[in-house]
Length: 107
Length: 395
Image (cartoon, rainbow over all chains, first blue to last red):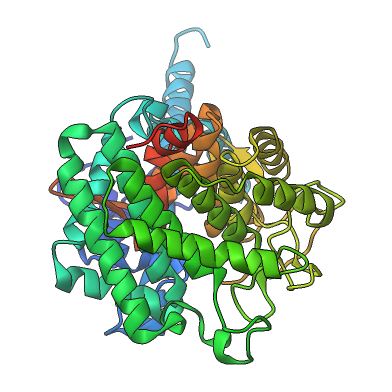
């Protein structure tokens, strides 16, 4: 699979649903979102998990909201992203194998 | 259309296979050898990082104030228990790391003095939840075994490390007061809140009395023996054999066996009745401990008991029934009884879902709070203090 073409990086082009490129795009999007939440310091609000307010200034609701955003993207980054990347690699290998098999003389 | 369906099916199959490969491997990225959390001798790397953070809190009043305020919004008890666990940790750390003993002792004294001052100035309700004022204590004058037991154990722990003459009369006074109230109580049960008694508080108070016996040559072994016999007979959940966590002053059960209580109770019992302690740990481990895909955690209640999430259990994570409170306290149980396999899996979960934050060699878990981290520090350092009491060694 060609990730980067001449004009526009293929990774940014619309991909077919559940194709290898689609999975890599989703994995990249999750990673970027998690990175942004992490850099924004949302990790500090996850104390809500044990019933402690993340910030007295922001209050319960906003603290909880930021904590939920962080937790969702963290779990997606740690659990979903590797699964998407692994699945994309498997599909690419499978497609590569099939192409080679199809172009093999005598088949 | 057929081609599209084929592609989607292939994608889903690839995702399923990838998940089957990744999920069982995930814990390897968070698992560390048990020595990273707790060591037989000296301090583990994690204990040092935790300690650095806590010592910073007690040298930076603004930082401490901010942390304590956040906890007090939810529960004033956490402010108090964070102090207790830190003092007990520092006592163990002093015995593990004699070179740093002067710093640890200074911090212990600072915490104890400030806590006693606050108790004197603000009254006992300062460290209790608001419902303590809803009705009068049955036994008058009002005392909370929660406060008395933990303060007594703080004073005794400090003196076990190194004698401090100013604390000797304070310890004797507290011990005598608690023992006096036990003697007046027909059921040997003392309130922490009005008509509300806690197993945790009784065990901690009895540990403090045992430690005072070791320090000052008094003998309350009969009281301890009678209390343990009573607890075995009247305060055990018949279905699981686990000690219940709370009861009324006449012994009527309030809550059943709870993870947020039993792990520390089993640890406390090690000083009072070693065999009973191990029995309780093993029962708790069987009924409440769990490991899934290499990640350890604990339930708040056994399957046979239905309870609602509360301030002690913390929010319960559905499907797996994970209690933050019980899982945190499970570290103390696993560490006390040398259950390294479970401790390693708990530590993996902590690093996976506790959101560690490291700055300049200091560690805190964002999903935890000061009291949670102090309890973890205690789990990482416990041992030498109990050992010193058991061998009868004096400072």
